[in-house]
Amino acid sequence: MKYFKLLWNLYKLKGNTVKTIEQIKSLQNKKLRKLLNYAYENSKYYHRTFEEAGITREQISTLPISAFPIIDKDLFMKHFDELVTNDVLNQNDIRKFDKEESVDHIKFKDKYHVVHSSGSTGKPGYFVYDEEAWDQMLLGIIRAAFWNMSMPKILKLLFKRPRIVYIAATDGRYGGAMAVSSGVEGVHANQLFLDIKTPIAEWIENLHKFKPNMIIGYPSAIKILGELLEKGEVQLKVSRVISCGEPLCCKLRDYIEKTFHADVVNIYGASESLALGVETNHEEGMYLFDDMNYIEVEDGTMYLTSLYNFAQPLIRYKISDQLLLKESDEKCIYPFNKVESIVGRNEDIIWFEDKDGNSEFLHPLAIEGFCVEGLLDYQFRQIDCNSFEMMIEVSDEGKKNSIQLGMLKNMAEILSTKHLEYVSFNVRFVEEILPDPQTGKKRLIVK
Image (cartoon, rainbow, N blue to C red):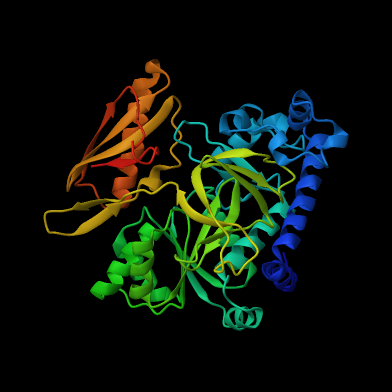
C-alpha cells in the first residue's frame, strides 16, 4: 500500500473509534453478512457445511451467527483445500513453498502472504492473507500501535521517521515478524530486528549502533532489554513500547513503564487474525476490534470470525485462548467490547550461567518452527543453571530414532548460535504432555 493511501485509510479506520456502539454493531453485521454470503458462494467447505446445518442462501442474511457451524484447527487443516476460495491455494503447495523458499520471499505465487502457526507436530497450520486482507490487517496493527494518539500527532511522529527495534522470533513466517516488517516499511520508518536466538552481546552491539526510539516485541524479551538498561549495558531513550506475541501481565506492564519511562501498548493478535485488540491501560482493559472481527465467547471459549479475510474465510473458528468479556461501564471510551482477562500462551525463559558467571537465555518460542515428522508435542524441563532436558511425545513410535536425532541436531544449532555450547541437554520420550492444572494450558517449560 502506498504511503499516502495508507495514511488516508488509517485516518478512516481511526474514525471507527468515535462512532457509537450501535454504529459499530451495524458495521460489524454488514461485514459479517458479506463474508457469510461470499463463503457460501465461493468455498466448497462452507457451502457444504452450511447446507448440512440446514442453512439456505436466503437465511444467511438473517440467521444469528450462533446458527452457523463451528470449526477448529483440526477441521481447518483437514479441509484446507476446499475451505479456501481460490483453487491456487493448495496446502501441499504452500507447505512446499514454506520449506523451500526463504523468508524474504514473502508472497506465495507473488500474491498471498503465508503465516504459519506452531510447527511442533511436523505439519504447521497455514493462514493465508491476500493483498487486500493483508493491507486491512496492517491498518489494524498500525492503528493499535498509535491507539491513543491523534492523527496530527501520528503524522508528526512519522515525519521524523522513527527508529523501531523488533525483538522476537524473526527467522520464520511468524505473523508478528511479517506484520511488523510490512507495517514499519509502510510508514517509512527505520527498523532493526533482534532475534531471540541471538546472544545478548549481539543485542547490545546492534542497539548501540541503531539507537531505537520505539520498541516492539515479546514482553519477556522486552523485560530482558529493560534489565540491560537498568545495568547500564545499553542506553535507550524510547517514547513507545509495543508488546505483542505473549500475554502482558499487570506487573510486567508496570515494570516496562517505569524502566523505559514510555507509553506501553499491548496488541492482541493471533496467526488467524493478527489484529484482534489493544490495551493501553491495564485498569481500563483491552478493547477488541469489533470493526475487523466478530468474536464470541461461550463459557470462556473463544470463537473468531475474521471479517476481512475472504481468501481463507474463518467463520466461528475456535481459538485456544480463553477470554472473559468485561461489562460495559463509564470507563468504556471506545465503542468496542472489552476483555477482562486473557488466558493464553505465557511462557517462561530458561536462563543459563557459565563458569565465569556470564548469563544467557533460551526462549521457548525459538524452537516453535521445528518441523520433525512424528513429533506430537514437547516440553522443556530445566535441571540446573547449565542443563535441561526435552520431554517428547510422539505420534509414531517407529520414528523415535529419527525424531531424537532431529531434535538433538536442531537444538545443538540453536545453543551454538547463542554461544551456549557449555549447556548439556538430553531428549526423553514420555507418554503424554499434560496441561497445567491451574490454567488448562500446556506449558513449554517446567522447572
